[in-house]
Each structure stands twice: as C-alpha cells, then as structure tokens.
Length: 262
Length: 347
Image (cartoon, rainbow over all chains, first blue to last red; front, side):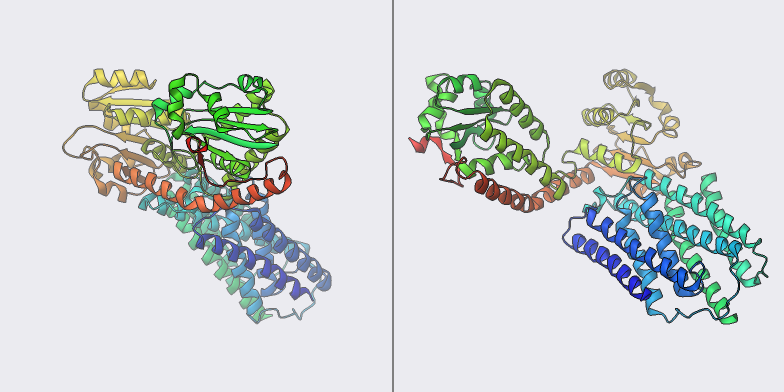
C-alpha cells in the first residue's frame, strides 16, 4: 500500500516535468503555479509514505536503499519548498522535479525495497546521523540544481542566444549566491551527520567512513576554493553537479555494501 | 445603450496630424452636447481617441464635430476610425495590451489609459458602462502580460544592454561602470544604466575635456585616458565607443586585470565601429562581450518573440470580448462591427 503512495508521488513529479517540457516545446517558458502545486502534492505523498513506513517498521524509514532514495527525494523537495521561494528562485521547481523523478524512478524500478531482517533496538543517535545526512544530501542536490541553472544562464549569455527561459532565470550573481548558501547549508548538515556517526556506539565500517569523509572533503574543498576566489563561478557550478553525482554514487555504494554485509 | 469609440492613431495619421487633435475634445464638452451619456478621452503621443456611450446611435458627423476644432480639420476625416460595440471593446483591449502600439507589447500605454480613466471618473465622464469596459480592459492587460511573453525582452540597443547587465549582476546599484570614449551611444547607454540605479560612472576619453563634459552629463567622474586600464580592474561594466582603428581591449590587456576577481563577472559593451574590443575576449572566463551587432540582434529577437506572442494575446482578448459582449450585450450595443470603419465613409 505504501509503495502506491510513492507511485502517486512520482506521478506528480512526472506531471510537473511533462508540463515543463510541453511549455519549452511551445517556445514560451514561464514558472507557473502548476509546477509548484505538483511538487507540493508529490511531497505530501512522500511524507505520507515515510510516516506509514516509519510506523510499520518502528523507526526512521531509511533501513534499505529504496527508503534511502525516497528519503533523499523528500529532503530535496523539502529544502526546495523551504529555500526556493526565499531566494526567489521559483524556476528551481522546473529543475528540481526532474531530479526527484529520477531518484524516485530509480528507487521504484530497481529491486531495492528489501525488508531489513535484523531487528535491532532503535538507536536515536544512529537515526539522527542517518536523517541529518540525508537532509544534507537534499541541500547538495539543490546546489546541483542551482548549478545547472547557472550553467544554462551562463551559456545563453556567452553565446548571445537568449531563449524564453533566459528571462525567467535569476541573474548569475543571485544564482551563485544561492549555490554558495546551499553548499554551506549542506556542508553544515553533513558535518553534523558525520560527527553524530561517532556517537552511535556502533562499530563504524571502514569503507563507509572513508567514503563519507571523502564526500566531506570534496565539498569542503569546493567551499574553500570558492571562499578564496580561485575558481570562476562556472567551475564551481560544474563542481556542484559533479560532487552531487559522486555523493549519490557513494550513497548508493555504501547502502549496497551494508545491505550485502547485513 | 450604444458603446463606441473613434479616433486616430500612429497607424492612420502622422505625428503632425495627431498633434493637431491632442487636447482637442474634452469630456465636459462631449457631455454638454447631451448626446453622449458617457465619455472618455484618451490622448497620448500615438493616439487621440474618444470612448463613448449614448442612448441613441451617434452619427459620424456628431463624432467628427467633437474632434474638429476648425472646419479645416474635417478634411482629415478619412484618417479617423470608428468601432462600435464588441469591436470597440476589442480595440480597447488591444490598445491596453500593447498590441496596437508602435512597439508591440510596450507597457506605458496601460498607465496612460489608467490615467485617462481616472480623469474621466473625476470629471463624471466615465459612467457604469465605460467603468465596466475599462475595468475589464485592465484585467485583460494584466492577463496578457502574465500569460504571454509579449512584454518580454528589450527592443532597443540601450535597453538590451541594461537588461543583460541586470541578468548578470541582478541589482545594478553597486555596479561600477567605465565609459571609454565619449560618443552619443555610450551616453545613452550610460543614462539607461543610471536610470537603473548605477551611481559609480567613470568616463575616459582621449580628450579629457570631452570626458569631463560627458561625466558632468551622466553625473560621473572623468578619468585621464592613460589611466583607463587601472580603472578597468575595479569596474563591473565597460562601455567602449572610441574611434580607435585597432582594438583597445585585448585578451593580453584583460588577463592580468582579471586575476583575483574570478567570482566577479565583467560585462563589456562594445558599441564602437570598428570594434574596440577583440572578439576573442568573449572566450575568457567571466567575461561577457556584446558588440553593437549582437545587441541589435537581441533587440530584433525580442521584437520577433513579441510578434510570436500576439496570437496568444489575441486569443485572450477574443475570449474577453465574447464574455464582455455576452454580459453586457444589451448595454454594449447589438451591432458589432469587427472591422474599423473610416469615419469619412459613414456620412
């Protein structure tokens, strides 16, 4: 039953994506309320799923790869809803929906919704560690989205080919400021998640720890070069996209390995 | 109640003719004839129109008499058009949406129509029917602007430059601008940037006197020509329009300037012919170079995009005209004429 909620949620995001593509095909792109409503609905269904699944398993629903990806999609939508309007980046929804659709589509299609067999006692530090890390991934995902928006806008300005979308995308400096804030926000959450991992009282798998620290160093380096002004904003935007791609791959690998070993 | 409008615009009359009629008819004068129950005069640089409502059909001669201040003006009758009932509503909706303007999609007309409506309300010229008509027109204008891209994109070189600067920097208040060469186009562009809040304007020219003159005009400060490279390090926008035969700004000159400002873009507007800035500068990271042709091409793109949007705008207008006609069919008249009728052929 709870998987049907995710199906509905994915459908909402798919509708938002199709709507965006249809308006792009017409040559007129404008952020409409339709996209926002579709994302809100998708988020509501995701929340309902997480609530029901959490009740059913008696813990935070991030016990297998399926739940992890749904939680990640939910975090992306949550941070978009919280951050998007604040930075007047309403168009971000048009870029966020495809990302969530991709994440949830993968979760639904891959055979990864395998119930966790071992029933260990609830560890609140562990749950905090896992959920805060997921939220950090949500912020990183949105920095990736803002990075894509930056590159689209930058390309149009460089080539002098201004399409309808140009007039709806925020200015380059605003996008770069949003990328920086999202990176800091994600990095702070990720650091909290990483540190809390040491308080779980459980043995830390070496691979998991190395991967998590590698992601932390990657994002830390991006922030450092951004702070020193050594790299052009275009490069930072590109790095945000690469970093998120790498982080999701690592996340998948970590969960895949821990599911195999448990 | 009969609803109608008549007038002349840039489509039918040249500016000299329009000037003669601007300020001619007044609402008070029209109402005093006893024929007009409601009247509103719209007088802008591009049109002079009267919108009216009456209990009985108003003859063309009576409308013409309202316009004509002298007998000689009757000879201009063939320059006037007249629309009745739904055609009148359609015409007004097209006017407020900017479809009837010289530059398609311009938004100034909406403010002018609102002003004329307020004046007519104040003078008692706008009664219930014109009130409904104009309120609906304002709704149409809003919907056309929000649902189509008819007002999008700048359509002149100066405004394109300002729009691009806005898309790079967002707020222009804190931007520093260096004008290289004291030409007329750079003055216009500088003024356009100034109107968007730019306060830090520097002017450099081979003749310091001309630089000082332009700096005074745009409320900036003059910079000796030999110092422009040093000043360039600090600026966000560079406007160049010198008469140099060889490019002044090259990759070699810019490269050292861009050190340490990786996160600050540089927008270069080259309006000189021959060009002052070497084209390969645009390949440098964080540099956005636009010459006069690329600015003009964007202006042309915007005009083309606005034209593309007219069909969508006309559709919105058609829906509103049909709805307005259905709601106020009795009041809006029962003989819609969808094509303009030259007043001269009426008599």
